[in-house]
Image (cartoon, rainbow, N blue to C red):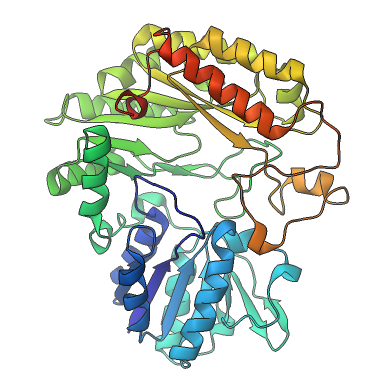
Length: 439
């Protein structure tokens, strides 16, 4: 039986370096269980290629992976596909459905339902039931359309040891397009991978509807085997770990660094990851640098300790300064991710953020607006004070209003910080990220 997996087009153009790994994992487990896969990556295909592939779908089961920003396109896709393949069952999964409130689902929703949480076990169970002509109501982790209502099947956490998952089927993507684009822009061939899932920390804005709060990590040897495969098969010479908490299990990181350093790919692959400022030390950074780590990206969020406490980050500005000083001492470029548009933000907070940037000397500053995703503590705190945007207006790259007056607008805060960092880069006081050196 064939299963079609779709990563939809976004409503606006944006550039990305990497194919959607989640879809690659679903394709891999389905293939492992005997299903054939038709994968459509709207992220990289042209509009003409995308719509041509959509028109050719004949599969019994169609899965659409969606963020909350892509839900409108996903609902539109479901409507089109139901008209062209009326006997197909269409399910939408990913981060979008996992934080979707029922009242936001259109009354004319054309799909069979939604897959909630991590999808590897659920998609296999669902495909097997459909193949065997059994009722898919027996499948766990679904939100199923029943007339005008939706019924949820029992939730079950994924029990697979991450080492037992097959590697993502990257060969189903137009992978060379990604690699050539990266090579052209940044002079290296880079792919992403995931070493762990889940996050036990309790930041108030973080949506954990997919991977949850239980931290699970692959073994160093399993990760190293995937790295070797990417190098040998695709001539990859750079990697990015997409994990929220790459450094939480430091023994795994040490083991992985030692495996890389002792191997034939030592000195041939650079890599980067995301980390917390309160989880690093000189010993681990030295091992990481020796194994090829070039950059670390930290969710610093703010230069004000009161705001960090409000966001429930669990660390202080002092942790940030220590971490950035240590990274620069060892030769790892530290990137800084900041959040703007926090309720009650003031001009003083802008000055504190500038002060932190000047002191910490980040290689990169990434600015995001505080976004209240349904189901997060932030959303629950403010849901009576602001109107949740209609799905067609959902943009996590635009500021939200929380019904609390701020003395500086989120846009002004964003623009001034962006200009401030740009001027620091021109002054040669910053060692820029590899992603800025050629821009």
